[in-house]
Length: 352
Ligand code: NCD
Ligand code: ZN
Image (cartoon, rainbow, N blue to C red; front, top):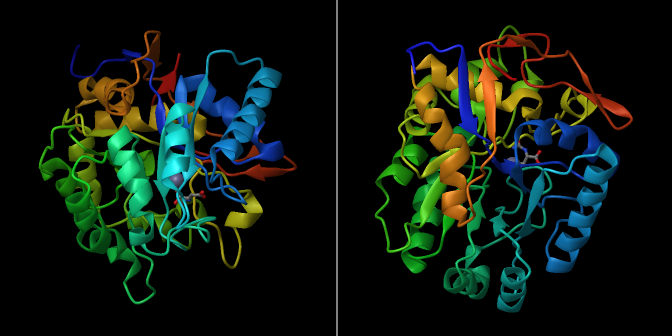
């Protein structure tokens, strides 16, 4: 590969953190993801949340019906259960038997539709014990929720007060620290002691690799750049970019593409979430190219995720070209519209 290639070929990537919602909008957002990715971890923060195997199976069949209606035959949703204070060890065993890919820990109130989340991780110890034994990953929204902790510090405080104690109590539990946003998180995962099962990894979104918190306030408030955990200072963006492009298998792709209708974002109390699915791979390629590390994209996007989850790597290849793609100002979303990340601008790379 030359220093500035115009095309790169990679094994088809997967998205290890994705929101597609439910109902009418699914077909609109799913088509964008399925164009690029072979599989995606489907987040369970619906209303009501996907807390049981039965609910996950029902959700999966609704997704399958949408795939069928779209004529998509080469995309696999990976289902996740929403952990609550009441999740039983029995439900964990059932989840394992039924091929559920993991459980998601939302501290109660941390983000969109997390009211039913965990109020105290100690309530989940029997479920966590079962997950550790069975090798089912725990996916973590890593922010504390108390209003007296500054919003920009909530991830770092979570590491010290929740994650580190949790890892001490469950040293072999597989944990994915989702959508990390800080230098502290990147370094914590990089430096975490490796247990027999190499138990911790992290996903990183395109927006946290490409933008810092100034992007939320550039010339006025920019609701479409607001997500949780919120964008941080430039030093954090640099640390995340370094982690993602380091070739370290503990860091892999998870877009956290989180659709909200335009009206729900452009509001007095706008929802958190960036819709990056339209050309997520182009955004990641831009980020990797910015530090001359396009050669590290394939590991991050296509290898390290399935390796961590114990799933086979994909075999099909895709090609990205350095060809600017215009991002529409709005896209259809059920009866409404959505404003994608980079709306009205271009992304330097696109899928061939
Ligand atoms: C997500 C959503 O809208 O569901 N929002 C976000 O800002 N990332 C929830 C989440 O992953 O925190
Ligand atoms: Zn998310």
